[in-house]
View 1 (cartoon, rainbow, N blue to C red):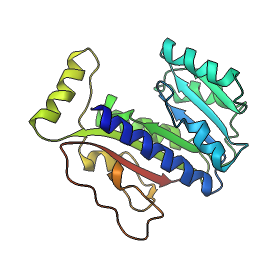
View 2 (view 1 turned 90 degrees about the vertical axis):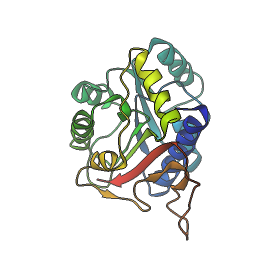
View 3 (view 1 turned 45 degrees about the vertical axis):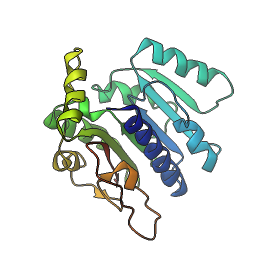
Length: 216
């Protein structure tokens, strides 16, 4: 997964957060958020809804240090949770004082589910979705490789001790379960523009990020 694809993932997430905020969503749960980059989820959400609340969840000590610095320096409404995303019950318990789960929220799993086998990814999404009220949104993205060179990149990552799954488009689409996808559906991250009057077409490429947003 190249720097270029990672950047496109971040750009997609920013567009998805902006769009969800434009639908009136003022709460965001960013699972496995990773090192804060620009634009951050809270910066993007607050640009549309200044009072937006964001819960960042990760378990990397270095990431948590950076996130806590963000929360402590002029970023009201930002919550940082040290937690394992594989434990939905514990995560929900940790954020419920700051995120009102009786109101719609936007759940983000950006660049996360390629660390899970297909069945595990489906179960994980379903576990979190079951805790969201109708009117919420789910934002997913994974890296995808085609071609020998791109697949070598996945293999190199996995050889470092962390297994990475190269999910097919069909597998990724199944992670949403019965949820209704927001147009344009499951696409290359470069093509996800829900307010575009015409479909956006990106040039085919071996490495890309596959994305989608669905309504609960």
